[in-house]
Length: 77
Image 1 (cartoon, rainbow, N blue to C red):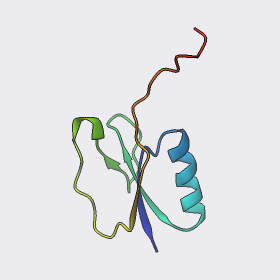
Image 2 (image 1 turned 90 degrees about the horizontal axis):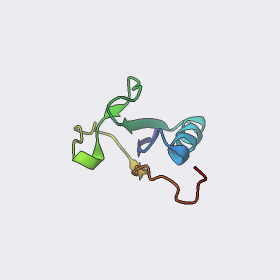
Image 3 (image 1 turned 180 degrees about the vertical axis):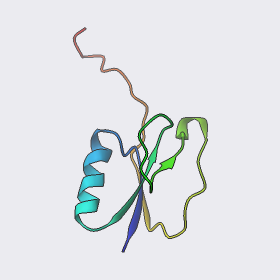
Image 4 (image 1 turned 120 degrees about the vertical axis):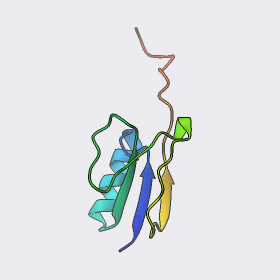
């Protein structure tokens, strides 16, 4: 079974990718920020501060989707 590490897995694109990978029988390891609900296979880390936990062996690919939330300047307030 292939294993993919997904950063930004709790975001708009990351959630959908995670569901698609799981539906395709691909093991997903999510990297989530401290404070997010983490499952047994999840890693807790903060890429912005450089706090990255040791990665488990056997990761075949990384989908790096993490980003900083920026308010939409076109949104109505």
